[in-house]
Image (cartoon, rainbow, N blue to C red):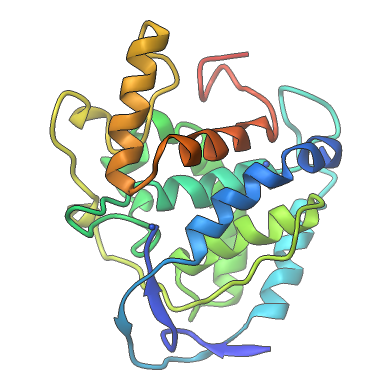
Length: 236
């Protein structure tokens, strides 16, 4: 169906097929949070986007046999697209109502170079041909929709998608952060030196997004999708 971009509320934030099936619950928790928390009002309607056609193009990218993953054979970029959608949304701060999936500010510095976003330029580049085919579609909507399509194509459940996000124009719009982790952006690190320090760090980051401990565990489980990469997370 065709949906007019900009006719829905702007949304903010509130992973081989076998691996995907094992992690579908956690991935659904991520995607449900990414797409189902409207913040703000309705913007003016723009050119219609045929989301069924967009889905077909994203599936072509997911199924491209030329895709090679350094960690394991038979991989698809599905987990990478999910990570792009999550990291786009995971900048949300409930206290200031800033960040989140609206804006696609990861296109710009300094957000592009945050350590947590290592490797995600690849995901953006893989989706760029889809954006060029549908120029009226925002990057913000494309990244979230690609994450949803990836979950569904990897064996996860159907997830409702609501378009209407808009793109911000420059790195001046990248979400800022304060405190000891401000240089690393708003996303969590995987290891702060000890289990206690890492747990405290995760709470600090995720509590600002509005999550409790149970929800942090559910979201963290989505890392069961895909594989580690030394050039991204530093783990193998």
